[in-house]
View: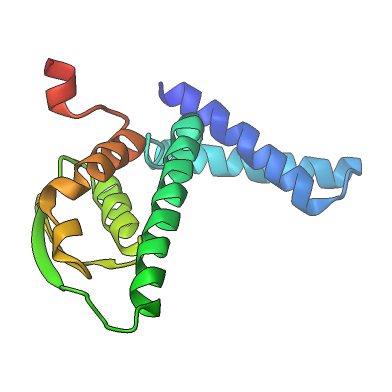
Length: 168
């Protein structure tokens, strides 16, 4: 699969170079091709090319995750806006420990940032497979409220479904 990542990186670098340079004279094309080849050789020799370094194969999964996350952000915005416009502030802040099934640092970062991007919740700490989350409403900040986001984050970043779904 490394060859696939290398070919994908070559296509991506070529497209970016052609789009950003805007120069199509033979000498400039030679310099562009040379720089792309040098980058590919260095990346290959340093063994930097893996699934996390070349995520373009997972673009459809990422896009579907971001569409889902944007919908969740809009729903959470509505809740926070309603709380702000009420005459009496009725929030019940809570701190909860949320377990994650994400295995890679990338997936944990995606999950933690997704929680923080959602209005009304903030990830305060990440330690191992646990995250400390602050929420505006205790009844909407329960560990089970984050299961779907955890599953989708793991699937988008780790490229796998949760163990319970695979086993079941």
